[in-house]
Image 1: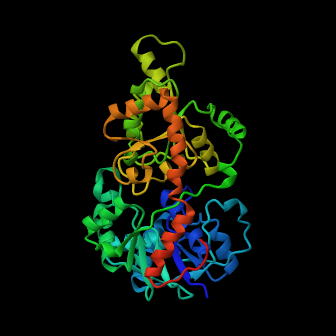
Image 2: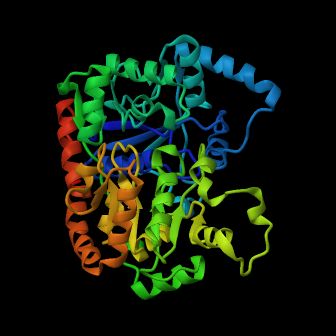
Length: 450
């Protein structure tokens, strides 16, 4: 009989992907391949009621919400119920056509839902300092929370993945309520059957900042999973996509991809790129998140910039504008196009201040794209000797690294050759072995090939 393992759908419900959503999807696929039955617990507001078909339909169209004046009352009632314990309800799957949603959905055998679960959990913990309780049908063997949320399932082993402790290590780079966040991760440290993380750097932080003994923390890592239809696409077709979609030439641009927020260090990257003197544009691909305008400040020197007609401009102002017009901003793009952007880049530049894992580095190396990244947090252990490592606070060092990548074809070729073997150490096969060992310690045998 297959063991039933539950994971949360907290980040999976977001319309645009996050690194944690990528992690949760990868975890679900590996667990299913290892022979587990996988259930996913969502918190969609609109999927509720007794009608199974309506629950399924509204699960895939979760736009319904309460009028503003009723929201506070609804939040209060859900917080009270969650403190006492709520029952998740299964969402029947099979009537809605989901072929176009494959990239967003995890692997699953069952889906459960509790309306507004995660919102109520966060608000309730902020008000009372207590974890909410959710009861799941089907007697799962373990509840694996893929993000530090103040929730627990009674009667089963609750394990939690803490990807990093950035809100505690770099509090100036996030919008998290630090008191609530610290209370949540301390609560997890006290009650978790086990804590999972994704790098040795994060494991050290969990042990030192939360006082968790080493035997209660496992670095299971993560895997790079890119679809064959994107990675094996002919170069000629990718070149056409780059020119047609983005106006870019293969091998003639630098790339950063990820959320534009203080932690990602985009402001210093732009400064270093401009100082490098490269003639190849810097493409910044990612959703503009908190404080993005400050990170992109060099591109928006004053409000008049958007209103001055283009054309020959003499003097320092013209020189400055020409430099800044070389930075190309692209909003969030789907994975099938992002893979082509990575493949065609001259190099990927990722000087993040702090990462629990650094999946973009592994993805770029897997695709044979040269990488420059930071010499701090988890990034050196992820990149190994297959990338240029720089101090993320030193713009001069970054500029010199960009110059080297721009001018030295042999360096680019060497890093491109070293990347795939380094990325292979984060293959799905190796990740599956680490997961099997992790669950075996909890008394759960996973016998599938992985």
